[in-house]
Length: 391
Ligand SMILES: [Zn+2]
Ligand SMILES: [Zn+2]
Image 1 (cartoon, rainbow, N blue to C red):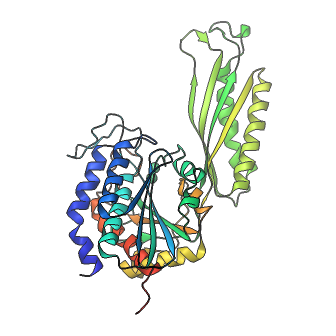
Image 2 (cartoon, protein in one colour):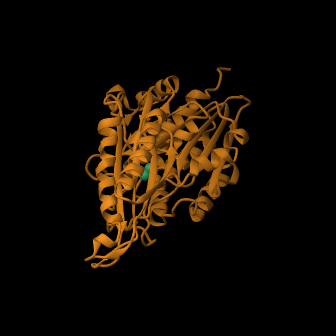
């Protein structure tokens, strides 16, 4: 039976898996039910299963023939702390948590590929199916890499896939070189001097200092970073005070920074420390910056991007593969794996209507119509890269 037909027959079952995962979202490093389910399925398909790498991470290994070539395929498993807005039957059963980034779909597609490849074994070599925890800013990829992912499971190339709302079902986007931004989070603590709200002369107002810092930080991208570089700095939180008539002791700011090179990221951090210190001192206050570099930029290897694009083109035709999509300001911790092993991260269309809602939105839902194509991508990639030699 042709690959596509065989995978199409799995569609109803894949949809059921995806909706079950969607109904039971788990946050980063808490994916116990999810990883139990992934491990049980991988074992049932006939994969060797390794658990506990990065707490809840799972690696399934499948071998066929005697070939020595090895590739890795990666999916993420975690959900977000968002209350789901939709009223579907597979709506989140866990209050305040939802699969708003489609990692339920990513996990399902990689499981589907593992099942198909285990049943057909039409390849020669080894595939590691890497199910990572905690992609959403909690360090899941770093945990797996630091605990020896690629020493225990060496791979010559790795591939991953993220759904993209707004890209039609049946389409892919593949970019060579930088694709997604490096990301950092920051916290700023301003210390002033509390006083009666009617007697500001007796205190140092940290709320006013925080407001000036928030505005001054907006000059880093516009005045310090080279205009030809792409970067963004967003102050997303300002906290301070509890009462109408009290000038508080302290105030806090927090936010995120994105850029496409480690150099620009370093420049932004240096500028932030200088501005925060200077503005606070100017008002007689003090301030401390906690700048946490989370993800490097996601950079696709040119050769592997060409290979992945070739697989996509073979599945859906050149007209359905966007080869030069715009840079994405979002970050992705698959970047940490790509720093260790060459590979490529691609986007698969989640649709423009039903799947058009942006990720991280309470109304988002992974589009099940994308499942067979995602499975086919991984399956075809393995069958091509680890092709059996002609007898
Ligand atoms: Zn996300
Ligand atoms: Zn995601």
